[in-house]
Image (cartoon, rainbow, N blue to C red; front, side):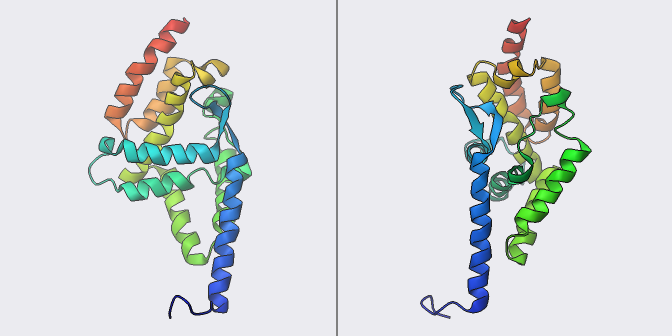
Length: 207
């Protein structure tokens, strides 16, 4: 089939579903996160966060472990927060850290993934949902690196803005280690060691 040939009904339907998904994804730009921009001027939105993480992956690729596929990592990071269109952002430090990984939150995110990825044609829905599931499980080298970046970015935002959500939620260094460091270390141990050394003085200065 030539590029100038008219679209078949099936091709037209496929494009309609793809654009339905893309239009729905635009709503992620309206989901506000607890974390602010680095300058502290306002809260970032989840669309901005996803873009920033993709850039993190490109720039910090030398921190990835052996065999990590950067293209797959970037795909995961672009997709990972789409479920927040339905669930909103659940800050990792809220409610003593319990709400972020609660059974209720995880179930709500799974339902959101069903709905949002289900807007796509079946083959793309299957493939992109599989990437989202892989990221959530954080068991493959690609997912562990992606998860590490997802944990590190808010830390660096908070550090740049003078404390950010650490001050808002009265976060301790020990809580940062258990909620963030424990997830970042498997995918990027040297990166977390460097970040850890940069943030410790902020916590020491608080008390």
